[in-house]
Length: 190
Image (cartoon, rainbow, N blue to C red; front, side, top):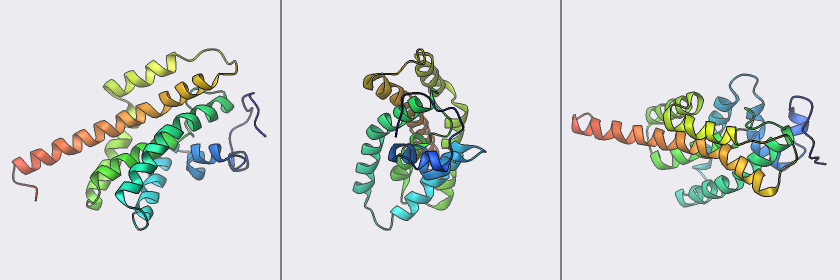
């Protein structure tokens, strides 16, 4: 049973598995990591992607990612509403779909390129330099009082949670593309 009142305790497995939205938002438990939940969620996303490659086509992944982004706006906004927090660190669905986006663009690739993508994505997501930080601060400052939100407010909050991770994915892909062009110009690439 879901209530509009924020929960009073730290989320746990029992609480998370009570609804599908919480389970997805917390990355099937990876967001419950006491240390670096965003990194744990990104690692889980990477593992899920590698397993999914055996069963899904690139087109399937594109549909999953696209749907995951739109559904993620509701999931992240709804669960943050339940928690009474703007962008709770344990909500990792946003990291997951954004990193899947990175992987779908760079795959097939070597493990070293995937590791580089992981490190770049985590750098951009955790430190939020430049435009990513501007986006993140813009959405966090727009939060109002702790009164129950309308569906539109929940979706907007969720969009704010997801969009900075999409920006981190964009800058990860941009740096990888620049590095590949430079390597080819220098004769280091294949």
